[in-house]
Length: 67
Image (cartoon, rainbow, N blue to C red):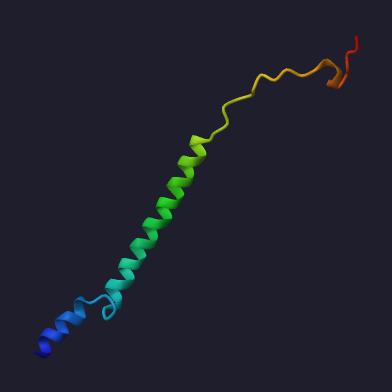
């Protein structure tokens, strides 16, 4: 009976700190990696597409042209 309890304690998450800390480390690593990759994808998806062709009125130029 004592042996069975000891086996369950070895496999239990809250009693075995080595397994639990390793598990939490990998979960944390996965979350950080997913966050970084998601951010990189979002930046790539919303990337700058180039200089737009904007019509600028002649009277607002640095050297304005009047009629």
